[in-house]
Amino acid sequence: MSSAPTGSAILTQRPMQMPTARGPLSRELIRVLTEDADPDTLIALARTAVAEAADIVRADDLQLALFVLYELHYGGVRGVGDHWEWSPALIAARNIVEDEFETVLRERVPTPERPEATSAAVSACLFDLTVADTGPSVSRYLARQATGEQAREFLVQRSVYTLKEADPHSWAIPRLSGRAKAALVEIQSDEYGGGRPHRMHSAIFARTVRAAGLYDAYGAYVDQVPAVTLAAINTMTLFGLHRRLRGAVVGHLAAFEMTSSIPSKFYADGFRRLGYDSDATWYFDEHVEADAVHEQIAGRDLAGGLAEAEPDLLDDILFGAAACLTVEGWAGEHMLTCWSDGRTSLLAPLTR
Amino acid sequence: MNDAEPRSEEHPVDDQVSIVAYPNGPFLVRGPVTFTTPDGEEIPPGRRTVALCRCGKSVRKPFCDGTHKMIGFVTEQEPGPQSR
Image (cartoon, one colour):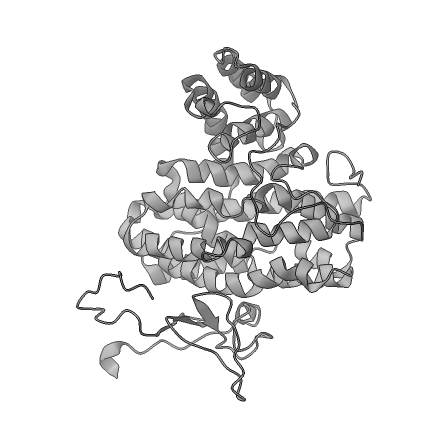
């Protein structure tokens, strides 16, 4: 294993570096942001890009542009002024892409039959949905047969989200109240290390990344990951950033937690099989127990609690949960297809 | 627990341990509690809210590792407070 790049136990490495453009919209967006240029042209470019995209989920230019626009609301992008976060033209361009993306997700994501708006029924429905999720299993592949190079690719694919793990769902905290809010904060507190920054899940993941000889800077590998990976992350931010979609972000988190505990065990087994030590597998080992706790709270108290408090959100809770399974499934399927064809799942193979 | 926590009549003492049985899943334990082996050796739970195995098949006992879902573990209807 190559020597790990330098890094501390505590993760403080945002804003991210500006990614490379993948088409006309992202090229102009990057120019506007870095040169403080007139942003109004982006609105027409966004319309054209949306109109011309055969499949927005796999449209590199659109997903990258959306990812960069969203990042302005998180830790920011290096060299870009903070004032761009609330630029009306950027938000108008973003809304054009988001509207199409949400429409496509609602068309393609199969949602379960609506249960009663009670905590018990909603929780049971979500557990049934996630148990029935028999899509391609990256975790089983990792456990049994992934090569060392594929395991590193997996970390690269995951790093784009996991180095800011939990952040998209935190947008929902001030938009909830009562039982659902307390449940979300209880989960997020654990995600963020319970007051101990070195135990923050994103920081524990950085140890795995370094053990694989990869860079642990947030966003270091955005240029390497395909649109479908960015689409999975953009889905979370889309749900998280809009109060209107608070039901969906809650459903997303519930499904995410419900499909994490057992796969984490497989991931840990896989990395152990490949010779990684217990510090490197800590992230996955941690998630076996953590998410066994979180999934109960997320199903019963967060999603169930929200459905009882705001029954009108029930359909969006189910949509968010199903969307999580579907988009994460697309990203996983991409990796497995590439690997079974003997090629890289990244846009370019890793050079280090 | 935090002394600044408001204390309502329903929850006169918020610093006691609570255990919630989740249907078809583990017990969730909150509050000031220590876990030990039969020999008295402490088992650090690693988090504030802990899930204890109820299906008997966790490989991380006493903690839950999600195995109950793989084996289709089903709990009986929990009796309500009145039936005690």
